[in-house]
Structures are given as structure tokens and as C-alpha cells.
Length: 173
Image (tube, rainbow, N blue to C red):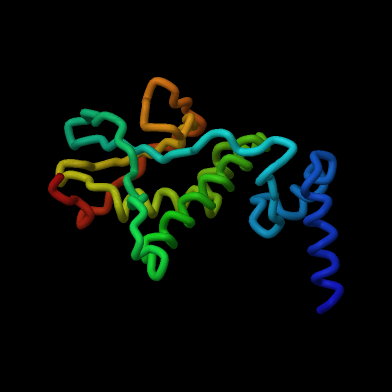
């Protein structure tokens, strides 16, 4: 068991460097088991990534892009219990993994079959307020300054294909 952890640690250290990532991406192609730590340097995070979605009605009309509102305003009670934190962290991790997949030039078909893609699609289908008339849904990851929801500074990073909405999903919006 010690050898397993030693091997994982060694691969994790190698994964922190571009040359090492060339090797480790063959071992972990979806980059799920080897963490990449970029909290502070050499390139600290200076932007936010958000998930937006739109739907297509039966007539083919497309809605405007809408933010996936899963983040709650912080309250004092969140010091003790913050039940929505798991969902927030799930989306954050999935978007981070998608960003790595996109930057590693993996084919779109493989990205669409990856666990983070499926997680994001599932979250959109489960939490987005979709009207009864919606037949298909699409999500997109956008990069923004993170200061406010100014759509002028949002840069599209990845757009999914359209996916059918389950018949029982429709919610009056």
C-alpha cells in the first residue's frame, strides 16, 4: 500500500510541471486522479468561470443565455451548516476539470463523454428553471473578471451540444 501512495505522490509532483503533465496525461487522460495545484503561483487565478445555459423550445426558438444560479449569498448560519456548498464545489471542480480538458486539446467527442461534462449537464438539468416548452438545453462555460455579472467581459470557453430535456423536467419559469 505504501508503494501505491509513493507512486501517486511522485506522479502528482510530476503533474505540477508542463513536461511532467505530458507524461501523466497518458496515465490519467481525464485528469481525475492527479491534482493540479495552482493556487498561488506561478500563475494565480485572476478570473472566474461561470456556467450559463439556454434552451430550445419545440418551435426551435432559442432563449437568451441565463446564469446558472447555484451560489447562495453567504450568511452567518453558513458557519455552522451550508447545505448548498456541495453543489457549489461540485460545479467548481467540474468546471476546473473541463478547463484542463479543453486546454489539453482533447477531441470534443471525448470531452462530451468525460465525467465533468456529464456532471455539468446533470446539474443544469436538475437545477435550471426550464419552462414546459423547452425541448433541448445547452450549457456554456464562460470566463469573466468575477467582479460582477457584466456580460461585456465574459469570454466563451466551451459550449456543449444541445441535449434533450427529460419530459418530466419542465418547470414553469
